Length: 192
Image 1 (spheres, rainbow, N blue to C red):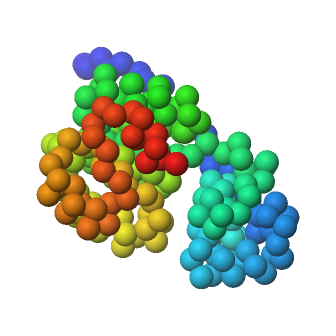
Image 2: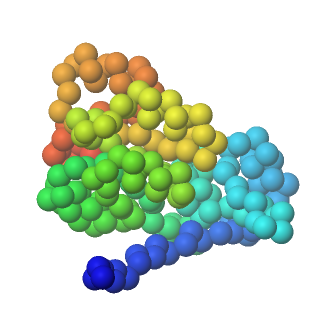
Image 3: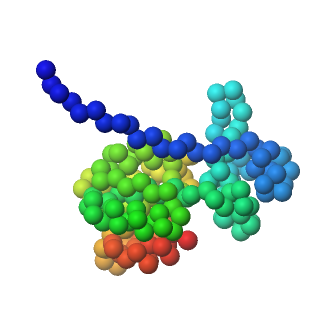
C-alpha cells in the first residue's frame, strides 16, 4: 500500500464582487451607465447563477485607471492580481517579494500549463512571461489571450533578455512591454 503525504489545499481569497448599483454609487454615476459599460465591454462582469450581473472590484478599479477617473477609497484597497511565469524559483520568490511590497497580489508559476489554467480560472490584470522558459510560444499565447473575452484586456509584460529584433517583433505582436529579466525598477515602471 502506498503512503501519500496529505497536503492541505491552498485556497485563494475569492474576488470581491459588486452589484452594478454599488459600482454606480462608488463612481457617482447612474446605474444605467454602469450597465452600458458592461454591455459595451468597457467593464467586465460575471453573471451569477441567478442571472444577475456582478463586477469584480479589481475590474471596476481598472476601469477607473484606464479612463482617468479618480479611484474611490473603496476600490483603492483592491490588490491588483499579477500572474508571472518564472521557471527559476529563487527569481520567482524575489519577484513575489518585490511586487507584494508594491501592493500587488502575485502568483508565480514555473510551469506554463499551470499558468494557463490559473489565468483562465481567474484572469489577472497583468501577466508577466519569461519567453525563454521551456514550452512557451509567446505569439500563440498572446493570440489566445486576446481571443478570450475574460483575458483580452490583460496586460502582457515580457520579462526576458531579448535582442532588439525580438523585442520589436513582440511589441508589434501586441505585447504591452518588454523588460530585461532581473530589472526590478523597469518592471515596476511597466506595471504602472
